[in-house]
Length: 195
Image (cartoon, rainbow, N blue to C red):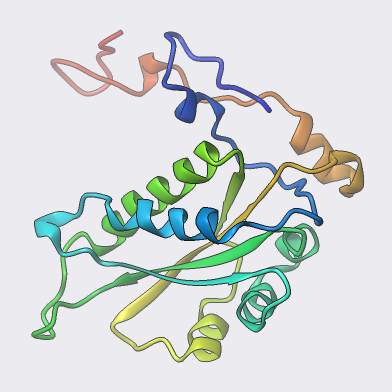
């Protein structure tokens, strides 16, 4: 694992969350682990409790997993096949009256972070990907036009980075980094650091 190098101690779920590509192709999720991912997502906050997050999920070896895997970009396709599960996050864009639903993407993001942190709590890892074909996903699963496929998440157990191509091994072993708080949190005026 690669815990966050933070300026103050973080809650373990946050500190231990990272997005590896090396996944163990032998590990299968238990029914309880699989269900817990979506129960965690279900309890995320959302604007006006609109709950705009929807998911399409498959476990390695089933047809849903295979269809999701088929939508991935070339860069993600090779390593993500070792995931125990692939999950497509979809944002609801309109309410039941057909009106625009504000903050649907934000709500999906909150729910997905809950899902990812639940994975960490289960001793798993999760890697979120924008590298997939949205139109192919929409067609493969019959997703209505008022829903937007936004992210595919690979969930599994950490694997052996030596099994990855060289360019991905380098990413896997590189230190985690973030911009400093001085460039991230401001007071009084824009770019006036709080810390």
